[in-house]
Length: 301
Image (cartoon, rainbow, N blue to C red; front, side, top):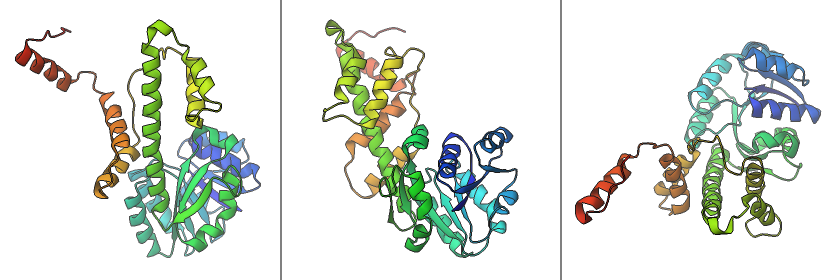
């Protein structure tokens, strides 16, 4: 099958490369000349403009967007729209908000262009291991794209599926990332407790390796944690600052809107926000309160 890939950062380029290895013809566009030069060596046909990319394929075309969520997606779609024909398909494989996805699908439907949302997980390991893909869109359109998903997945019948109509793929990936926040926070807190039990002088990398096999808490995330602990057990050179992509926030918003209690995911998001407050005014005020009512000592900076 033929596919145009728009956005050739590390993940987009890896996905395109996996498709080429699977026998698909892939063209690629990226505003970075260096990215275009890199993919040309991987069997992907580079295109210097969106016009050149679309011109590589006959209608009905399939174009995969692997660009940052938000305004960039809208601008890319606006640039593509005059170039597309009825029956073409746009696939958004990024972490877009599902509400934006539904809005975009409705707009494109007026031009008889199909829109498919593909929540994609797998990160930098996807090239070798395959990607987990949660797909939303018209059933017939998704079926038409089946060869692409089967090639990108860990196996043709594993790790991917159409989960529902347009928007459902990004919605499912949003909740997936919320769960990921909670899992990461639990691992981080657990290993921190072990680290602080200084009398045992525990080797955290060893513990992680033990837990990887047969343990109830074994997971791919634990595999990666063990790898990180093996490389840098003291976490030297790493600032205690954790970013978030936005999907954890959206998951918490949805939990509130649906009256679903989600304390673990919510608190894991709060911890990420807390990690960025190097001058915590609230903590300083808490110390001042204790001094006011109990005369407790205040630690000076």
